[in-house]
Length: 118
Image 1 (cartoon, rainbow, N blue to C red):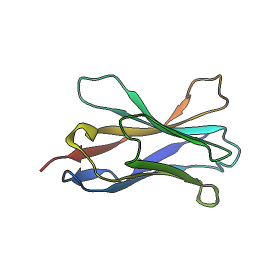
Image 2 (cartoon, rainbow, N blue to C red; image 1 turned 60 degrees about the horizontal axis):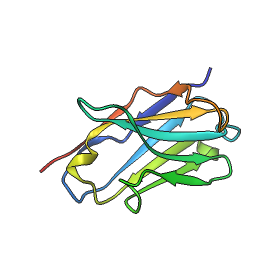
Image 3 (cartoon, rainbow, N blue to C red; image 1 turned 135 degrees about the horizontal axis):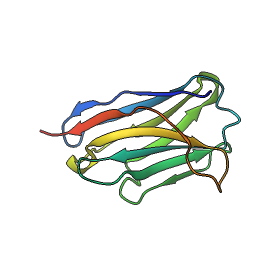
Image 4 (spheres, rainbow, N blue to C red; image 1 turned 180 degrees about the horizontal axis):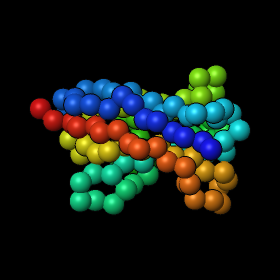
């Protein structure tokens, strides 16, 4: 059974950068789509970005131009490079996978906390 483990979160000042990692317990090369989500306190979880097996990417408008999603199949790892972080980016970030464009994200990691504050 696929397991996902996020890392790389932490406390950063506004304008700073972080790179999140999502390590999978097995090969990710055949996984149709992998995504990053976030949930801020008191808010619903929201989709942040996704990347499919063809390396096509999509981003939420709120992070376009600041976040970059990528995947390294050789390392079974997906990344989220975040620059110019804002206080409103503060949330628990989780990664997830789905089997097709018509299925829900069904495998989730435990999340990593990102806090943007001065």
